[in-house]
Amino acid sequence: MNSSSTPAWFTQGLGHIWLPYAQMKTMAAPLPVVRTYGSRLVLADGRELVDGVASWWTACHGYNHPRIAQALRQQLDTLPHVMFGGLAHEPAFELARRLTELLGPGLDRVFYSDSGSVAVEVAMKMAVQYWLNQGERGRSHFLVFKGGYHGDTFGTMAVCDPEEGMHTLFQGLLAQHHCADLPRDDDSFAGLDAFLAQNSHQFAGILVEPLVQGAGGMLLHEPQVLRRLRTLADRYQLPLIFDEIFTGFGRTGSMFAFEQAGVRPDIITLSKALTGGTLPLAATVASSHIFNAFWSDDTAHALMHGPTFMANAMACTTALASLDLFEAEPRLEQAAAVSRALVAGLAPCKDLDWVRDVRVLGAIGVVELKQLADKERLRQRFVQAGVWVRPFGTTVYLTPALNISIEDLHTLTEAVVGVLRAERP
Ligand SMILES: *Cc1c(COP(=O)(O)O)cnc(C)c1O
Image 1 (cartoon, rainbow, N blue to C red):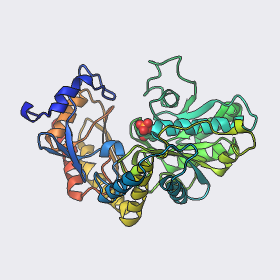
Image 2 (image 1 turned 180 degrees about the vertical axis):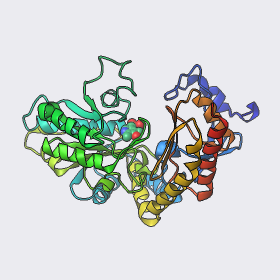
Image 3 (image 1 turned 30 degrees about the horizontal axis):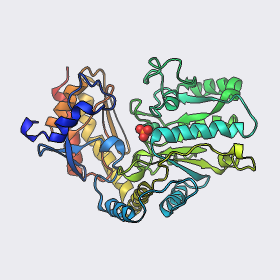
Image 4 (image 1 turned 60 degrees about the horizontal axis):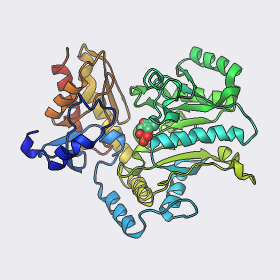
């Protein structure tokens, strides 16, 4: 970017902004974006990048979808936001009805919040209090899994994989949970079963990202793993929480990942693509079985949580528009087409000797490298190739809009293959 095209807001603000997951001193400057449309980011210097990340997987219909924009404008003019304590509004109630209809029988109470981490915290709080309300104390631990990621708050950091997360840094401040290997085979299942037979009384619930562990490394597992967890949850009567914040809304090829396993959670968390990437919103949806433990004449049995901006009317309206789009447009067929194109387009990476693994599930394409010393250099090469791809850990991944054009998708996979070929050590 040459300095004449660097906007004044960028230069003047850069000394005052604190960016995510970044060593501010040594990081490369972020790219100023001035406009978005479809699967494209338009930079201040006029360059256009094909977006391979869809803004952390949120923009499932691409950017600036007219249907979402129109719904948002209307809501802005009539009722942008009111507090949710004691007041009700149509978008929140309608969205709760539509979400529970979509999730199918059993998951039927929606609690709103404004970020994924908080949705997970609420799910954890529900599970812990589910036991307390029934007079059972001492169940404060969660069974969680290696490779898992559930958020950045103190509560959720503690349920992330300790190897990946910030456990060493915040040692002593984080709650202790039990982090196990996913039961990928009969032996590990038997091991977990034996462990729970001894220790299940300490646990409030089981928490897992179904089919794909996202930010922990884009690790995939078979649907069978979820059926085993359902079996264990039933055997030891532990609430099973599926964190579908990454996987929800078509990303894995089905509307929700759990559908592919044919088992249902007791609590599910949703966010990321819930509003089609336009506004922050999250939901924790509980089964009536969980909810009934709170249904009481005792006010102390109420769920004591209430984010200020929960159920923001504009966010709920965009979520409704997003659900409309899943009905009006062939989004899941498009996701299947994206999936096929990712398989074909990324296949040449398998021949590169610094590639460990190439894997695709739904509209998620992952190239895992044996080592990746200089992520920043790779990112710059991608920008030069006209794409926005942001490697993390040792993975290069694509999670584009589900309705990305086949040409744009081709540009993305060509860039990944080309850059990884040129940059191999
Ligand atoms: C992104 C993510 C979260 C955290 O969501 P935030 O909105 O960033 O707080 C939690 N769980 C999963 C699976 C995620 O992908």
